[in-house]
Image 1: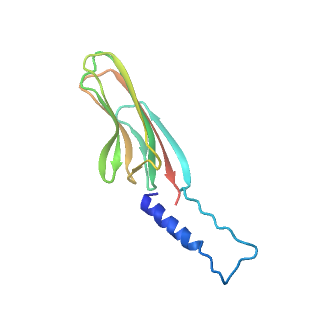
Image 2 (image 1 turned 30 degrees about the vertical axis):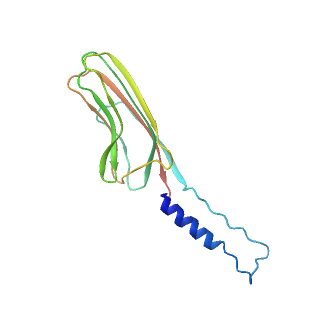
Image 3 (image 1 turned 30 degrees about the horizontal axis):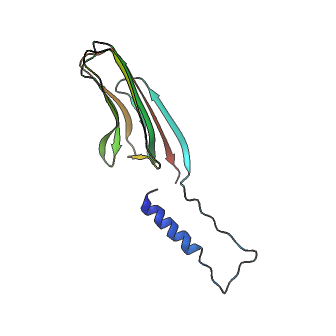
Length: 151
């Protein structure tokens, strides 16, 4: 829910709460509003495959609230770039990105927590693990945490 939608929601709630002094409810009525959207399903997606689709969003609003990206590589891996990407407002964005050191045995991990409501992914797009390299013996792993909103 955007700030504008939240403001409109609160204004509508305030108008609904206006009391007409000529009419009294007996017994008194209390109106309540749910200000947080209902989360219909939490999603945790894990893969360790290079260039794999982590998650196909479908036709609902999906919000990413966290992600973890890691890799392990041997000395033969060169020009390594590992990314979790998706589409936000019609642009391809890197949710997370790691770069490996050339001709070095190494492992790295990075994570991000995105404050609520999260990063809204465009409908009917995918969240993808990209692993670019010249030569490589490596394993990349990605985890994405998110949720759908009910309408």
